[in-house]
Length: 173
Image 1 (cartoon, rainbow, N blue to C red):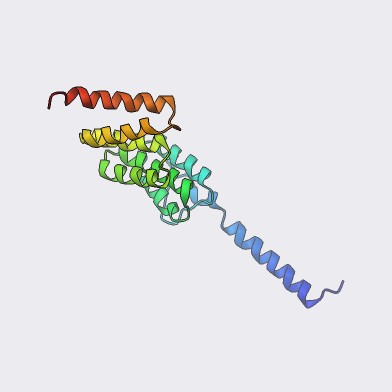
Image 2: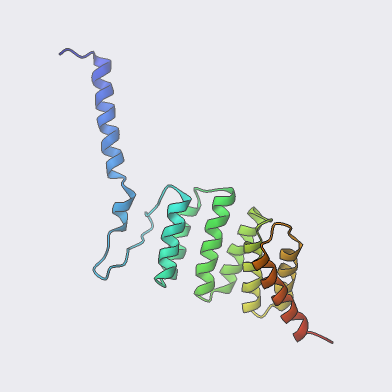
């Protein structure tokens, strides 16, 4: 069978592409170590936000907050809008659970700036501020949650509870 030069180059290009794609298998970067955990390194990236979200949830569930924050950080630059807000919120949660409230607030605020109508992100800001004993800031963000028509009943109850706590401790001051 005779192939034209163009056809031969096309086959070579296809084979080369398949080789490159097979060497970029992202699951290979998460080989299990001897203790059954995953190693997260600076080069670990995934392509879609849902896969990243699941991986971060798994890391948080395994109490590997440093790995969770690192994993979000190495992937965050590729996303915008609501996807970026989701990842910032997740990283904020990992920082919150590490008791690094300054970084948690920073990430929660960044997420809420990207999605100002997301009551969960605002409530996370309020919770972090309350943990830092910055009660007026916590009340401010809780009130913002109550102002949102899109806020869930659960978020509204949590925000109202936080405001009530603030007002009862600061009554008469």
